Structure formats: structure tokens, C-alpha cells
Length: 107
Image (cartoon, rainbow, N blue to C red):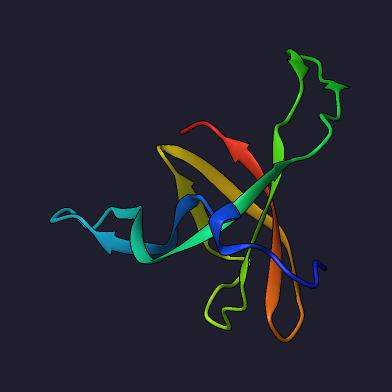
């Protein structure tokens, strides 16, 4: 965990989203994502890990967001940064800061 992050380095405005479910008039369950809150963070790209599947070559993109401590951010949420959606893999917290390790996915 960093002991100090300059406020000027927190240059990404990230929106946390919560998954919700609703039913159509025909009773079909539809999952949707709703904006919960936004915050400023730094972004650090992680090394790309490569793997092969039977269908295609896969190189997931991972990144780490660092921000002020937020007790309301949980792993079941996803993050939206400028239209890129990130699944939360891990959250490391201390009293002041938190690091959010994420993997990008395409809808």
C-alpha cells in the first residue's frame, strides 16, 4: 500500500456500478448495472498474462486503481472508466488507501 498518493495523481474519475435484476412484463429476469457512486483514483496497468483456449488466444488486461478508503466498495460491483468496464478481482484496504485489482471485459 502506498503511504501517500498525491491528489494530482488521482486523475481518473471512476464509477462503481451495482448489478440489479428486474422482470419484464412477461416475467423474464433481466440483469442490469446501475451507477452507485464515483470517485477519483490513480490507474496502474499490470503485466499482461497470456493464455490459450480451444477457441482463441486470450490476453486479459488487468489494472490496479488506488483511491481513498471506501467501505461501500465491494467485489460484487464493477468499475466503469470512460466506457471500459472492469470486474473487481481483489480489494486490498488499509485505514487510508485501497488498491482495487481489476480485469477489463467487453460487453
